[in-house]
Image (cartoon, rainbow, N blue to C red; front, side, top):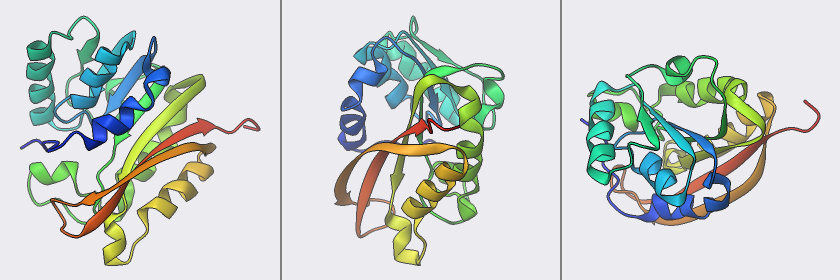
Amino acid sequence: HVYVPADGSVPAMYERYGELLRGADVLDMGTGTGVLAILAAKIGARSVVAADVSPDAVENTRANVERTDTGDVVAVRDAADLFEGVPGETFDVVMFNVPWLDAEPQTRYDIARYDPGFRVLTAFLERCRAHLRPDGAVLVQLSDIARAGGGDPVALLVERAAASGLTVASTESIDRRSRTAGGTETVYVFELRARADD
């Protein structure tokens, strides 16, 4: 019931942000299998909090943290919606591999992939600044595969980030074949920062 990252393309994109992660206190929102939380620990993060709405993902991440012997750095929180598991806490880096398809989830597995109306993405962007330290960064991964259905999640992310006082500081991207939706997709990691005038 947990989305499995099938290749190394996404971790490779996050490795490009290694300088942000080294020595940082990191929140990995929507941790899934825990792959990005574990990667941050191995890159040299000072601490990582792994959070997910799915109890299956939390259980899976705990097993993977134990398997990779990263429990001295990675703390896995109980299942909670978005920032409810980290009330009042702030971080140097907040990461989120967001659901990328605009549709209703039908199964527990689908929760990682489907975000109807991109409500989860919107709520994340509206609330993440309260958990970001001064000079902190938000790393958001998003696929553009939903464009095939007429939406534009990338434009939506940029628009809603701006409405939340965040600006795009840098972007990484790769093109690959989508194993879940078919066709070709571009996968982005956006580095967002608080606007200086806010």
